[in-house]
Length: 271
Image (cartoon, rainbow, N blue to C red):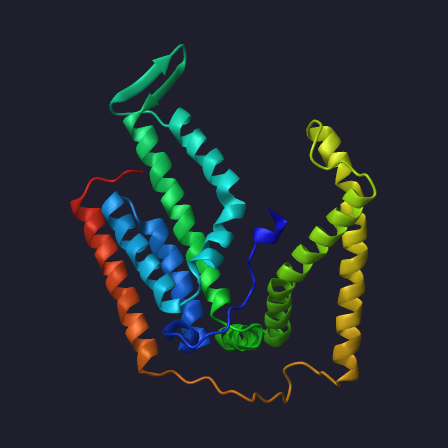
């Protein structure tokens, strides 16, 4: 399961999404996340799902890689579905025994919530799949530049956010390596109760913390040796400029938002 997590990874390519301005991609990603939560009917959510599939196709990221980003949340999807099925009541009753009942509204809400979560994860993953960490840092810094008025070190904040995102794959590989090393020494990480499994994770977390602090120190030392001074006087090799494709993507996002609002008005809400 650890190896299946692909959050924070970049997939090289020259697709339309890869060539979009990073600032526009950030804005559109957050906008689409908001639009997903605006969906109240299956038709409006279906429209967003189609847009998500279309964006994934345009990105030319292998479907296998996108599916890997969904594997870690399978348990969350199942748990969420179970909660909605048994605790949401209303409509036609499909099953009833003692105090347990499964109704039409519960099933619809469970399906609706699962599709919403999948769309959220895929859209968020496409941002990191199609944007390099460097460009993502520059985009965050540009978008947060108005905060400089309040004496906030925008570049430092953007660098921290990007480094945290970039080191997710590295830490995942480190966890997998430590787990294999502990298993080779006879550690049992897969059997026993919840308390026993929690105790078995202690030999993993301690080396992981030590390794993380060591990597952070080595990174800070390397940046210091290269005379890194932050955002003051810093130049960029690649300048970000909005192009026609960026405004076309913005128009599509606005059209999707309008479509979701219209469908919400004319069709019955699920939640």
